[in-house]
Length: 357
Image (cartoon, rainbow, N blue to C red):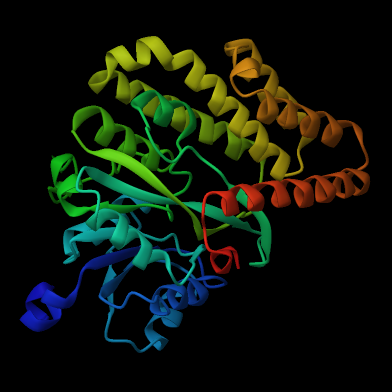
């Protein structure tokens, strides 16, 4: 694929943006445009069509820009495999990932390039994220993770990277975790584990932190716009939790001491996270169920993160007990208050107010 590109063009590409495409016809054009409108111009955009059955590929082909390359899978392989394909075709010094239902602020790549250029010990640079609803309306509520001094236990318990559209990764970092998949029809290099259809992100980040010297560090600006898609049936939450458990079982093979010390606490945080997912799905019964499991697994999360745990508890019980309309009024008021508090914190961190829009 790179043989068709001129040496001059290859030399000008600093960042390769990898975007898997599957069943996203409602969102993909906005996602692509959020990349093409970046203030930083030295990038390529690799669209990996994972045999999408809808109109997504046709929409991608209508966008005429020389920085775009479309790579097609012969059959559907999942998100991890699509990202691996993108990495194998990538030219850039840095590799960025954008899920095709999310979007970026137009300063996203510029800020991450500066960060990585000036922090050679950092292998993964990520940003805070701003939530959008399903229609793309910004909610003025943010993911506010730990940004610095991130240790393996922090990643295991809370995954500060937050979502798959937040990180920009140094190519050498990916090279250091590369392995050959011989259990496929055609052996090939892997970075994300293609046996996972969920939890592939956290497994990859954890493998980087526990098996290499690279650090993970965030920047305070909310440069990723993360869409809250409806999760659907409660069975999906069960599947999500089962996938996380599979990730834990794999991690025991390369980080046994970490898991021996932190597994129960990490499981409690994951159960609390799934309770919040149930709240977003407006399923109070499931939310209370998973919250109770979290507290039973590791009651100390109440003391470790009192505010977030009590907020999850309040939302879960209100959702279960109140009429949905009344609950939504309470939720909207809480979101507005939380958004103001978070925006004030971001301002105190020195982020330009223009980056909050």
